[in-house]
Amino acid sequence: MLQALPRISRRRTLQGSAAALVVFGLLMWWLLPIGESEPRGRITFSTGVPTGVYQRYGELLDTALAHDLPDVDMRLRTSEGSQQNLARVAGGEADFTIATADAVAKYLQDGMPGAELLRSCARLYDDYVQLVVPRGSKVRTAADLRDKRVGVGQDGSGVRLVSNQLLTAAGLNPHLDITPVSAGIDTMPGLLEDGDIDAFFWSGGLPTSAVRDLSKRFEIRLVPLGELVDKLHAAGGGARHYRSAVMPADAYRSAQDGEAVPTVAVANLLVTTELMDASLTEGLTRTVIGSRDRIGNQVHAAQLVDLRSAIYTDPLPLHEGAQRYYRSVKP
Image (cartoon, rainbow, N blue to C red):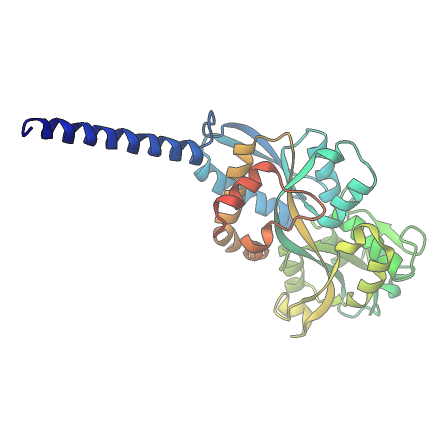
């Protein structure tokens, strides 16, 4: 009897160890995706004009991604803006991009090619619409742009979309009542400075470096646009994504005389398609949220990327990989 006790003890110890291994194995099976390895390969990120916020955000995200997913090579590709970005991603010419919510809504509403494939990874930061004129201009409202030469963004940009919406809300025909000038933020400041245009629209994060730099060498003023929000909403469609906003007094110190400027804002979404690998999308989403502070030090708008609001990507559903990430960090 005394000799049997050690055998029984050893048997129970072995049984306990085996049970622990089973529990550990089941736990690892639950936590780790079966059959998935670290993401690798090359992806294309469609950004925006060379001097715009989309491009700078893409450059900084590329650096962060190289640290977090070293086997993923991200190639940046400049574009005219949101509308062209969506066409590229939906058509398979790019894998990820940034686009404004109103541009996404229009793409869906118009039934453009590949629209049903579009998915979002995160709501990023808001773009603020900026109507810039020389300091001495008589333009005080958008309606005063009648018969003026106005920079309205490039054909494939979100700026073109929102400027047309705002001009219409102000009672102007964007094709007949102004002289529209197709140009991006890389050229519009110079055109205004040289007197080749009377005003220009821009939609971007605050502050936009091109507008800030212009304000330091040329006297400009920002025209209030906030009074047009109700009329924009009445138009329906993608215009429902616009909201009232205020550009802080210190956004462009030398352009605002210390005063806040009422305007219109719209959210930016990080966009891909449902065909994108879930593991890679999860990793990219994690990098976007995790690198907020690092990117925000150089792109101030990125400081507003927030885990709590990132999941609100209307009018697009979240990609499966993005859903995985948000579930993994849910309290």
